[in-house]
Picture 1 (spheres, rainbow, N blue to C red):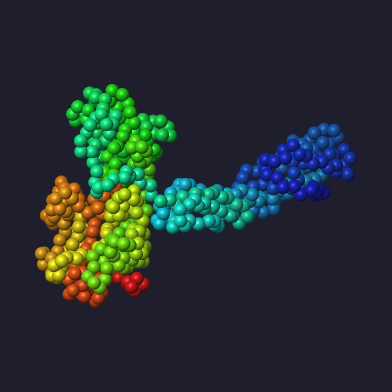
Picture 2 (cartoon, rainbow, N blue to C red; picture 1 turned 120 degrees about the horizontal axis):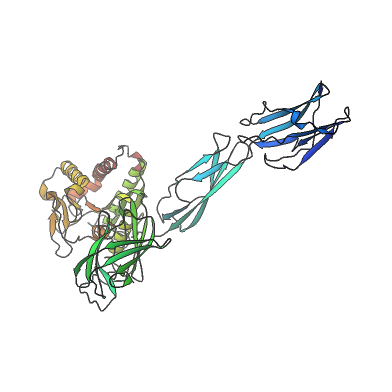
Length: 548
């Protein structure tokens, strides 16, 4: 029995490569015998692939006896890296002769890496970038190392690229990239001179059409408006900018030239939409309300609905909603706005110190926090410079609060009456008992801790036009316009509930000494922190040593 070992040059090929290449060798002891291995004699194949037999050609005495060759590849394990042989058995004049092909099972396929979440992400300046991760699959290795190359600086506007590089044990590399754009919020606001501006009289000769009232609803928006072109019925149409699909909403005729109705936006596909009003003819929908009365963005169902106004034309953008923050904190006042003072301390400094403490405490328990200012400035402001700084600050509160689970503003009170004392919690006129579960619980805990009567405590709202104060402990919803910008603007433009906390009158020397100088403010603040942690479903940790 003779053993014929076929030797050739080193060739690296995939299983499907070099189909046309043959290698020939004439066995000298049998001048009448010729054979040739079809394909490489040293064959490199990818692990976990299917082995393809190229075959062998044998000529004896001028006759093709290839079909009589027995091929044994039982030793080849395509699921395991290694060196194997395929055996070809020939019967030559009654003698068994063998030829071998060397098989090298190797890993030459790159890992497949896919991003979780979007490949393009927008992050608000000063916000947080949340890494949503990736999935990796490899044809052989069960564990693959992944390196993320690059970084994101959320404190600097710009475009950032992250490369996810997956490397298996054989050195094969698979990559994918994610782009992150850090940008300031874009808020479209008209310049106005007063605190508020609305269309008080509707002269249909001024504009071809306009929205005269817009409010958020549980599933979208409520519109009232008019068209110069009088019609018996009106419709509002949303047209997707990408695929031109159209969605029609029937409006109710309110009176001549006027319509009203709801737009359910929760079932619309994600995308950017142009908005039209249809009467006897079709026009792009205008919203001339301007100022602090046009809707901007809000969580609606599981969608984030955003409005923009290009030359007052209405545009709507719809995307999947996700929280960016757990808590938004507004340290009241700042910069040139000192707030209240008692000759010892300025309110703006008290608000900032308390807010930074709260931020530290929340973050120590794993929460994400955004603050409207982090130092003695007025912080980031949105909107036209013609707006009052309180209004611009309120826009920040609403814009970030729209992506947060809770939002509130820290203040400290003062009065010309040095005997005034106690705490106050201010909320929106639009909120009822069912909306104020947390605030009512916190009110009762404060009341117990302070050990003072009802006359020194308030949970209330206030009307913008009359200044009247309304007790919210009776559960009523008031049809009044909210007074404080930090409550009014986030609620009306962003559908965000914000709360103002004023835990003490710093003008009362006894209360100030007890609260601030003796550091009872820490205890008072911890009561609030614990209440919010419980509300958010977390576990409160009383260890505050790292935040003092």
